[in-house]
Image (cartoon, one colour):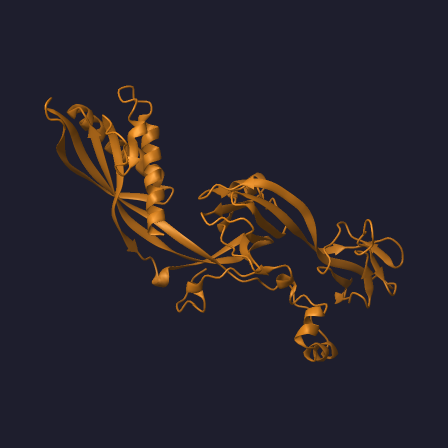
Length: 399
């Protein structure tokens, strides 16, 4: 984590300095020579080298625990797959803002499958909750979408009594040609009773999308930022769970690193060396510092070093002129550990039904029409890190 954080910070400083110096008329070649570590093929006449001087860990709390984050989205593992391609997921605040504060993607489970090492598709299963079924005739009711087999739950309202498939109703999903998904009751409803349904339905496949290792994608699933690392391998599958409201999604562990960044200025002319060093220090401390502060990068101290000379041409008495300065920077780090799934609904059962389910074997329970195993049947599993297994907070947290 330390070296990845330092490398990202160096790239940021290099990018900012290149942007600042690209318009200076006296040093047109300087932006191309602002790099990390002395990796010049040939020593340039002017250049700035950005290096890491060291760092120390700043703990903000015991065990680095920060709290719990609430989110619309959560990352889950797919059964028998490595689940390494996506490092983390977040909400896309700009997409939510453009959607008038609502999440732009319907609730459901969205599977991200890598068809190549640098390419992926998204296949979604959207949730439909409490849909009031439309009567076609006395015994037949229709849904607005074609449900996925095995995800249908039919309730008789207003008592919300759950009906049992094969006993109280049948579903047209196995018909040859074009199944309708219509519900056919074995007994007609009486009085003012009506039916509602919970189910999942496919929303189609989208892609392909290109993977850039170390960068994020915010277009494949609107409202979701998918951050890919460098462990992308063809065939890997991960699941993105989207809820209809923000729920506890992950435990947050974090802290700060206090880093020392060293800057070496190289020039063939002593006055050029002084000008480049002075203007770079003024820009970093006076202009860039408040802007980076809003992003969690705090410059706390700047130290100016001495000057030195290196021989360029002994016969011609020509030299390189060097100077250096260093910055002390504090920057945040965070790790999000996804939480397990939540219980959306608990349906009270009668004593006879409880006794019946208690007498079933594991194989019979798997075949029973219950919602207990639905998440596992869909291949969704909890993301686990071995370090955090069986670890619980031993101190109070204010949420």
